Length: 89
Image 1 (cartoon, rainbow, N blue to C red):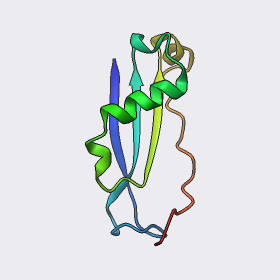
Image 2 (image 1 turned 60 degrees about the vertical axis):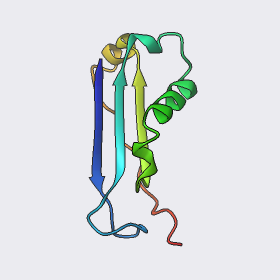
Image 3 (image 1 turned 90 degrees about the horizontal axis):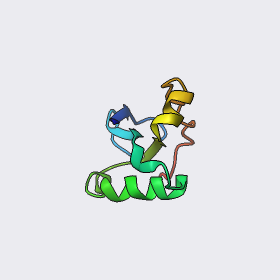
Image 4 (image 1 turned 60 degrees about the horizontal axis):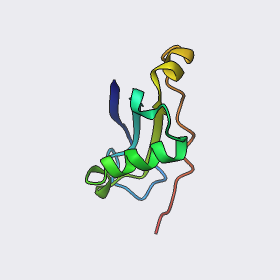
């Protein structure tokens, strides 16, 4: 099982304090995902991280794969989509 919870610095065009960690990527590889559709995997991750996600999280990227899918991807973590800035309200 591989679990990574990492942050990137926010700021700039975001409604968050400059230098804060607001962009996160979670990478999970587990046999338990074998019969679970991708959307349900993401729901499970969101549920497991409910307390952490109460904080100032602007963006969350989730990679949730089975060991076979991870091997097929050669262990490569896809880049997160570009941030479009979000709300400035």
